[in-house]
Image (cartoon, rainbow, N blue to C red; front, side, top):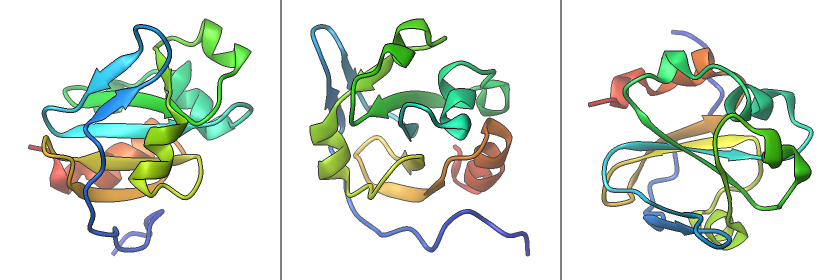
Length: 126
């Protein structure tokens, strides 16, 4: 058995709508990886600025509890939604949750790299 970055996931439902600033709303309607990122985090930077190739074919949403100038030059949008982070039960960044279209957490763990997360969620991808 390979080591993983997580304890068994806490079975719960998370909100399927992430509301950030003006025009920054994401809706989870299918299996989605939500990556909770924070400024100044190397593992997070791989998601905000790096290649997400290992996660191809999977919907990925980036969310942060805090705004940052770092998000201004990110390769993909970061939804600043502290209410969602709190309501989701995520205890801190960097973290990911893989949720189904109804918001049920399938698995979760610590965010280190796209390769690592892709390997950890592979069994849950549909």
